[in-house]
Length: 317
Image 1: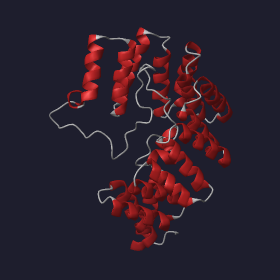
Image 2: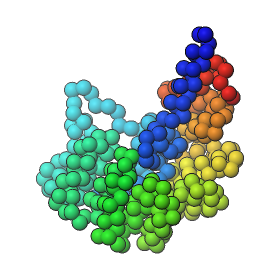
Image 3: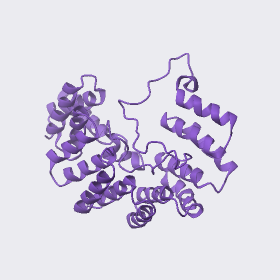
Image 4: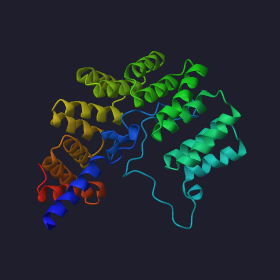
């Protein structure tokens, strides 16, 4: 009786980690659970909304579980602890422009404070309802919150008010893709690529679209094109890894995961691939390899422990 209950608990735990992040929208993708993905496989659209093209933020920047800003001391507010946010707020106070409202919104988004980020996007939209940058930011907010249908109108209006913007077309494509409209999303990405042929992030999104559609050779070609444009672009390496894993080339997939991070992260990500494909023994081995490489790897420890518990109580291997 005890073993039976333990097996049930282990199976429930396994279901929980398999569905970790299974909320609606892009957050449920396998790549969104990578520890060092560089960014989710669908890029957020090039330069951050509200930042001029002449001085873009790094479009490859992401905050992984190991890279995120440390929590502020209890006696400090996040505004005084985080210097980038503090500087953006000071500039917004001195010059409350659309661009500065969006800069503050982006800093709050970086810190995971999405409700406050949304308030600053709203300030920008009230000031300039036809601002393509503000409309893009609103569309991305809803997409990343798991409600892409609420952001689709804003994404479309951004393309209307900025017909020459590759980022607007790309953002529109990501909303369409999140809603399952693959071919309209492809058309939007291709328009973005026509506007900015050097945009690795658009090639990467086309790679992701082809991979999810089962067009694995086309996905590889797109990912290789993205990497040729920007060899250090982590999302493209991760998408290529997922594509290679889907066709059974796990050694090559590991090499691409390694190009996107370090050995511990690559082992962890291969573990996620094994787990998603039902190879639980191999997944546990990969997570344990990640722990040996990085003894403080909490996410790997959690998954390895639950998988071993599941296997020990009679779960399938």
